[in-house]
Image (tube, rainbow, N blue to C red; front, side, top):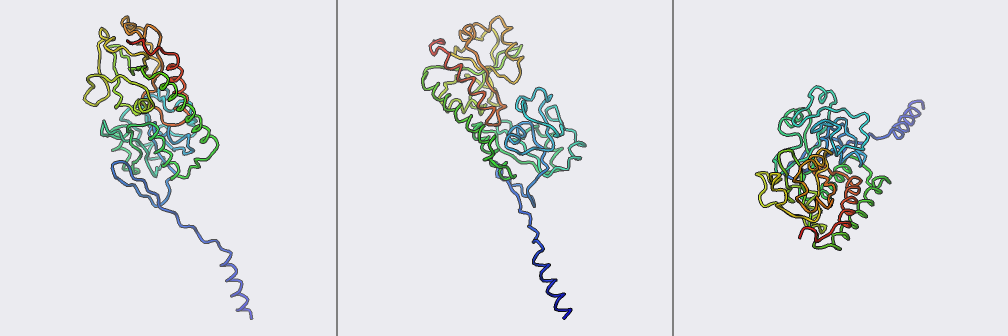
Length: 316
């Protein structure tokens, strides 16, 4: 009788014991066709500054970030909560390998730049970090919108809830800003714009195909003036300040990664040789740093306001 009772208790106890869930493997395939596979969803992620800017607003917080320069100058990260995230690098091509190792990362998420044939941070960073964890991520191609959507895909695979109210609100704000931008360009089909970076040595004119956000602007109706001759990487044409007026746009977009760029332009006596510069038809170009819907919406609103205020016959 006692043995039957013990057997019954044993069966009951087994029935109440939860079955341990088996971890699901995680994988991601990059644009080069390389697939990273892990035994379970990674939780300890080191991210480049741009990848962090794409992931944090989607609810994925890395344990470490490496930046291309001083953190205060990392435009992509401005306004984001970085509390509790270890900074393991503040110079291009450099990381603190001891700090990185102490984080015990499962994964490194960066971006692949086809024109440079390199991952974020360059070869030195890749060589330093890949012994700690595999590296993967999206490609910085011909659309920031597509890049953000790639970050959504990665974030969802890491457990992000893309229907979370703040995420949905940022996306809705972007859609509204994009519609307003398209309406503004449609209303001024002859308006031309020139994207530039100002250096003390020269004026640099951006090639549309070298910047994913410029490709978006072009796709959404903005007529961008392309340089006649770009550099060997396809990013810039270099003009001496004496030749500032080689191109005459109706609107100038100035690289806004640093306030010093606009200050440098204004300090040049020949800056106002361009009619648009003389007329103050100048606005920000969010050059290379947009990675999330919230920032994109804010920057589009500024450019849309400038388009609405611009004279589409100024450069004639």
